[in-house]
Length: 178
Image (cartoon, rainbow, N blue to C red):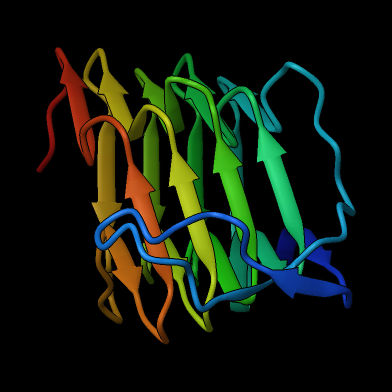
């Protein structure tokens, strides 16, 4: 596939109602308020024993631009030997995006592989990411490859953006990484 699996865009904005998690001062952010996707209680992208390859300049699983996304389960849950490869940032909050994850992890792998040429999670352009659990959870020999080819990081935060992670950046349970 070329492009982005989930491209969530909005136009309406409002001042961020949450405080900065570090300074506890009011947030200076102006964030998207439209909800182009309203996931229920389940995972947004779940793959079991399949291969997903997202190519192209953007090459993301999720791109959120001036929009609001609230998830109660992981955004990405790979299991049973599933493989996800992206040529860009896997989760890309590009501009004034607000993503809240209340589940145990934003990205979850169980006996699976995720490979990204860019950042695993990119939070840019005055966006906010709030994760109640782990940013990434790896279990049962899962493999996470970040920045393959062009370079990238696990978590990139830029442009005055704010990130809050309640658990570990990476939680391991019998997992290995090369």
